[in-house]
Length: 82
Length: 148
Picture 1 (tube, rainbow over the protein chains, first blue to last red):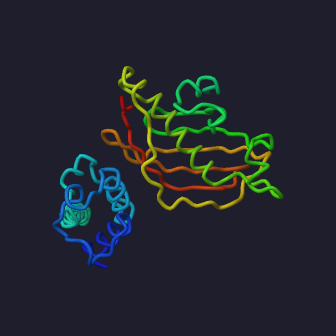
Picture 2 (tube, rainbow over the protein chains, first blue to last red; picture 1 turned 45 degrees about the vertical axis):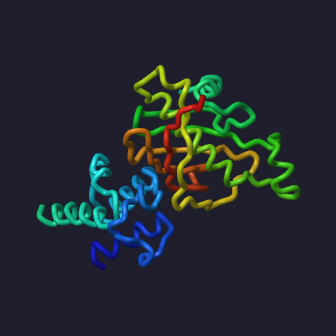
């Protein structure tokens, strides 16, 4: 499964929505009312599934589904290049 | 080790709503191991359930929450803020209740901080009785300020 699909699945499970209900560019906090704790849970789940480590400071760059996918892809590619 | 009397001072909750009896070990900002003896003298034993006393799963979750609160208290950097803040449970992820807990059991509650940023913390918790896992899962918390 692609990074995009896996991340989407993770996010959907944590926020309790279906993939087709999410605007991938919508802001978690401003548009969807998702708090920062849920964002931290998403980060932790992604780390577990992909076996990567993401600096919690990157949370500010993970404010929408597409941004989460982008940050995850960066880290997965980084690990693949090691 | 941290005694019950100190634990009571660290927590916002008051007995009988204190669900850990002592802290056996801890590493600041990392992990903590606490103990709670489950007693037939507690109110739950006659109510949950009248014919078979089983320690409620939600009390296990509360034990984890309070253990986490103690770890956060002893790990705090800002001593002045402690009186005006409390640790609020934010979420429970995949918490499993594996074996029933009953009066006479001694719970060993191990909490490890997996993520911490700003005023949020994610922990993984494992609760054992006689080294057998009875419950485990991940919880998230946020530090809240007392409203005036």
